[in-house]
Amino acid sequence: MSANRERVYRGGAARATVWRNVSGMDRRERRSHLTAPRVPTVGIDIGGTKVMAGVVDADGTILEKLRTETPDKSKSPKVVEDTIVELVLDLSERHDVHAVGIGAAGWVDADRSRVLFAPHLAWRDEPLRDRLSERLLVPVMVDNDANTAAWAEWRFGAARGEPDLVMITLGTGIGGAILEDGQVKRGRYGVAGEFGHMQVVPGGHRCPCGNRGCWEQYSSGNALVREARELAVADSPVAYGIIDRVGGNVRDITGPLITELARQGDAMCVELFQDIGQWLGVGIANLAAALDPSCFVIGGGVSAADDLLIGPARDAFRRTLTGRGYRPEARIVKAELGPEAGMVGAADLARLVARRFRRANRRRVERYERYGRVYGRQATD
Ligand SMILES: [Zn+2]
Image 1: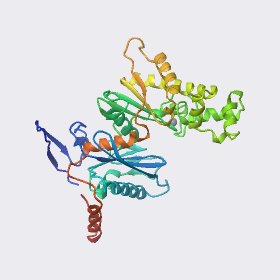
Image 2: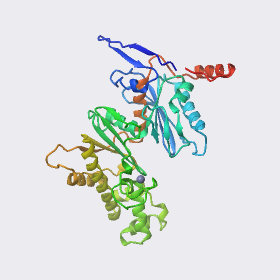
Image 3: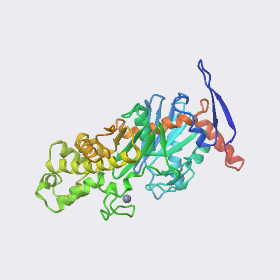
Image 4: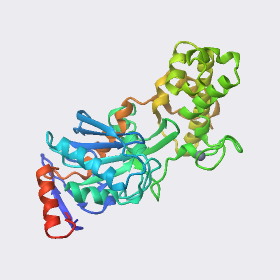
């Protein structure tokens, strides 16, 4: 890929010149979403169980969406790469694709070219951006999935018009992302926003990360299910409702079931949400003390419980916030874009690196790869 700077002229009455560096991601970032070309791009969300790919236009509208299973962790990194290439080429048969954005469940380095570590995949220090842009012949952007989801909620979702926001994703654990003045804060090494592993209870529950008492052990889907199962195993009278529901099979207690019962007014399930909601509010107060955003967006599967979760979180937040009564209070809101947020955000971030007249195209890619084989070298852009 050429490292030359290129000059891009933008249309319109005021023709501004935007400088960008074709290979340097830090400079690409200078191009804002306001000046990025209004072209469709592909966003890809790679989670632990599924890969979702969609063509998204400049207004955040999904034009087409495909999904497939995430290749098994034991498979080589190449298999995941092939899956991504196949999805993009499939979509590019029906749409002009000018760039590709990836939101991956894992740590992405600060210049967003390598995936340092992904717990569900075989990626270890994987140069994903360059591998994919070499094969797809369009610019590629790689980021953490929580970052791309936060970006989407700011651009098109619950935090529209609020450029200082913190996103908290409650799934099996806690994911997070920070937006400051409309910029994703990734930290010096790319791994900022790992709020789930802040220690909140010294000597508390053991966490898969190796430490004890991490926040996600008290406020996540796993915490919810663990508590419910403990009560069921202890044959507590408060758990009779849920024990009946699963026919005594404690393994069948899941987050969605607890949510459903809480909605129907089951006292124990409501109480469990109050507990994790309260822990959520305390953690948010800590984050407000450190980061002072105007808005906290709560996403992930557990947020489906709506006010059963967010109500207690707001109460605990107000009780715990430092300087309460003397400072403006951040809003705590539920995410709006649902499970597609990561994909939509990845696509929108990809517009920042898009080149208006470059498109992914199966025939071009195949011709290029054939050329690479015939001439015995890895074809490069
Ligand atoms: Zn932990």
